[in-house]
Length: 356
Picture 1 (cartoon, one colour):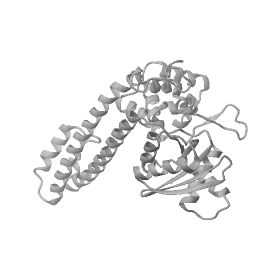
Picture 2 (cartoon, helix red, strand yellow):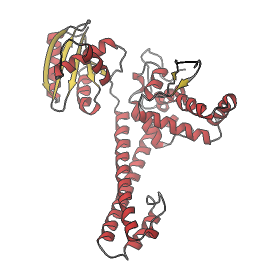
Picture 3 (cartoon, rainbow, N blue to C red):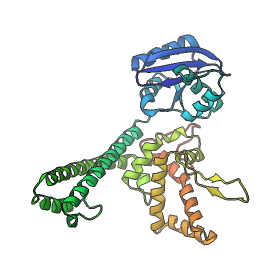
Picture 4 (cartoon, helix red, strand yellow):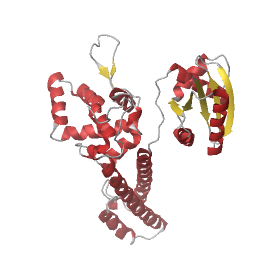
């Protein structure tokens, strides 16, 4: 087997091939275009044979097109975390930093950690992620605009400040707009302009939410049936998971989501765990949102939470353990099934992905 490490950039990609023990075999630089990617595949077939694994530095925006082109060409692609490259560079004999050195570090990082995530096509989750990310960007723009508007209103008359977190509602914007229409001067004019921006951004946010909801209802009805999981949270879970079949087990998915607890080893700490700061923080946030909601609702989540409090009498530690586990096994299976529609199918072992 030959491993081709890739150091990706905006305009060029550098590839370095190594054998099973990490010896450098060949090097290639191509343009960061589909034609350049095809050239790299042809180079690998002519020089390296058919048993080739492409190890790509995990820089999603820079490497996404390369991954898609390689997968379309029938190549096997894995993603290498950037931190693994740093370890490989420290142990290398060469000094300094360059694209070939980085590509070599990527290839050797895969050889040292062969159980890395496998890249795969999943257009459904990618489209949901694009929509959710776009909505979050627009929400951030609206929040920034609201903050600027509040300062202008404070400058005009602090007594006219709207209620906290109320400008997303049309009636509160209308009241503020009527008052601003009576105020003279440049500050009032700028405030009216920013209020119009808030209205426009709110309409865009609502339209994106409806678009996301329409898609996720057909993709993940099992997630929507889960208490505490709304349309936006379900879309976040599906989008950030990016194809659940790429995880070898439910435990691997929990580790990726940052909800797998870490044992505490130092001192007299038998049986104690701590929260991990690693993993996908967006997935972690979505799971935490579901957990906090289930604690408030009557059901299995609240019953489990109260049971742990009664058993341990340490709410802070119980809160940590509740957030860490969040029933990741059940969530993993529901994302995998996608309600028996999009994404359902056979797992790697040949059994149904929804089987227990």
